[in-house]
Image 1 (cartoon, one colour):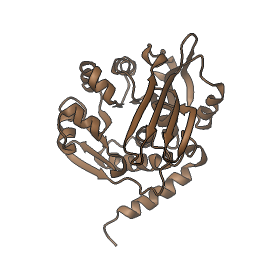
Image 2 (cartoon, one colour):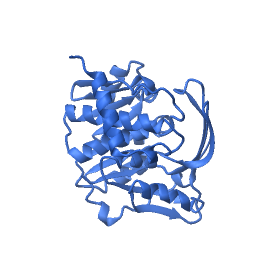
Image 3 (cartoon, one colour):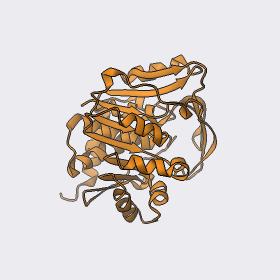
Image 4 (cartoon, helix red, strand yellow):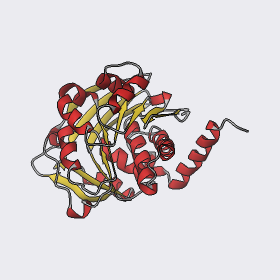
Amino acid sequence: MSLIVTGSIGIDSIESPAGNVDNVLGGSAIYFAAAASFFSPVRLVAAVGEDFPAAFLEDFRHFNVDLAGLEQRQGSKTFRWRGRYHTNMNHRDTVSVELNVLAEKLPPVPGKYQDSEYIFLANTHPAGQIELLEQFPQRKLAVADTMDLWINNEKPTLLKLLQRVDGLVLNNDEAEMLAGDSNVIKAAARITELGPKFVVVKKGEHGVFVTHGGAKIVLPAWPAEAVVDPTGAGDSFAGGMMGYLASTGDLSANGLRKAMACGTIAASFNIESFSLGRLKQISRADIDARLREFSQMLRLDN
């Protein structure tokens, strides 16, 4: 049941048709941790710079994230990202990015974390993902996220990572880029040939597709009436998915299907506000209520 995540913790500035925010908490690891916390306790390994606002630590505490692996590094600056969404929020522009501490070595894994069994390598440099993964000999499930930056610039290292993980999470554009095939079904199948037992392809408002042991699983997205900020939607999906898997230990195709539904619902709340605003307002009861409604929507019988 021990779930651990490593990835980026950042300071974001975001423009969307719903408004603008500057210098808010972001990064793949915090969105993942917040969503996963509704299902399972979460451990975190990440680094921030000396400029990281102390007030942001309250958000970690709100979600009861274990911070023994969070290092505030003197002399370094926190990862920063500025993005702009268009009217079609499936598309965004990265206006600026400053890797800062994200380009440095990951902090050491605390000794008490080394018994972690469920490992999620949120989006960061694949060399750092490999280094962290090797510190968990008791792992039952290891899943990684990636992005176009690493596919384009660090593909040999990424391919080494794929030989070591059980699952990979990426969006449809990234799947096409990695596999060299625009058909999502074929792309996912080709990626499993690179090592992972299953591949999760996120398709934004069009839902999610998973291939697992020959089985194909498809779920739609939650029919959101208003999207404020899609930032972190994929990370919160992964958090809900991994949180469920860590809490149940069910790694079957059916267990993965239920985990995908949990991830879908976590992401559906995340997009309703900037940063972690909406996730901070809800409880597990809200997640469960929307899950029941989502399940009812998918029924084909009477």
